[in-house]
Figure 1 (cartoon, rainbow, N blue to C red):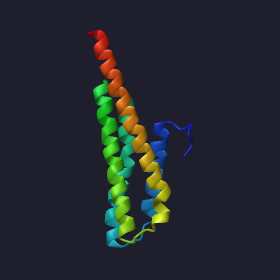
Figure 2: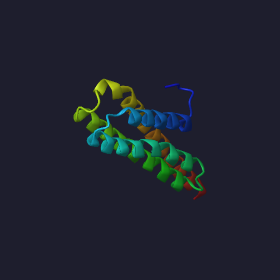
Figure 3: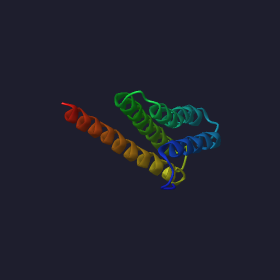
Figure 4: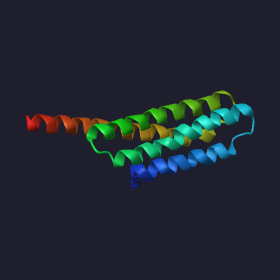
Length: 126
């Protein structure tokens, strides 16, 4: 993934990759049920990030970032189930799972930074 991409661009690209994955899954009931879960959680990440960009407060932004983290964790879970159930080969999802983990790391850092900034601002106002 390009280091110059913003988090909004990266999460949108992630969602598009999830959509392509879902479209390529086998048509078995199991694959489609798990696939819909991946589709829902994987595409919602970017929506939460975009909502967070329009936050009215740091607390609201932190909340949106943390929900996006949860959605990424859920997406990883469903991807692991696709692999564990032999519906998809692990190598096929390696890059997607790596990107999910990188996005989680970025979002954890972002929420910590905002929380720290909030504490510093609160202390300086006292």
